[in-house]
Image (cartoon, rainbow, N blue to C red):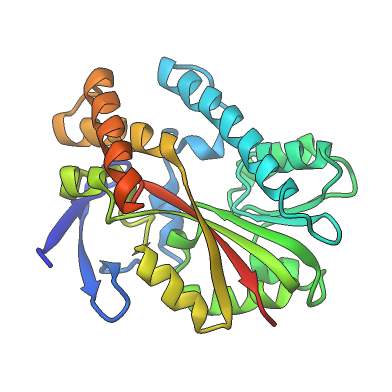
Length: 284
């Protein structure tokens, strides 16, 4: 695979290499920052998932799309027909998904390391719900087999040691519970088109870059199986818009829209959309 060198466009302008692991069909960001160093790469007002900002035109577009996406996510978990309705959202941001799920009678908890975002989320939820700063803290309050559904919306790519993280999440998940994992797909057309400028590489915040083969292989190691894969079609447009800015220094809405459309049309045959949601069954 051709060598890819990416730039941190959000914070530092540092460069990182994406190293290919052929046995997993996985890309790894190298050098990988130490866990203690990672927070500084998130210190940007432009990291929009940590705010509910509507200051700019781009902010308003993002928040509009987020409301639509949240509604789809809630419909997705409602359709799972679980025995009860206990939900853990890992990387819950400002809590929009949890609030919407709570309105549909789900008992919700969240994990969010960013203090500002966690505070916003906590203020939105009722007193029976709690936002934890990390997984270790949550594990002190919850026993094994506590949740029917655990969701990671664009989270797994941020986790330094995904093996240990998956093991912990599996313990929290009920037998036959469902893990929802949404991640960017580096096999998509927009990823190949933009190459090192592809915004969803987002180094070094994204430490891992997954393909469908990688996800299936990783979770099979824990006797968990992918039973359904769904596209996140809007991501192609959003990521293309950011990628245009990375490549040319400014956003071009028309070009981004056309590229996102082209990526989605090509993915109708290949299945390789810009981002994918994996529904994963816990067999334990």
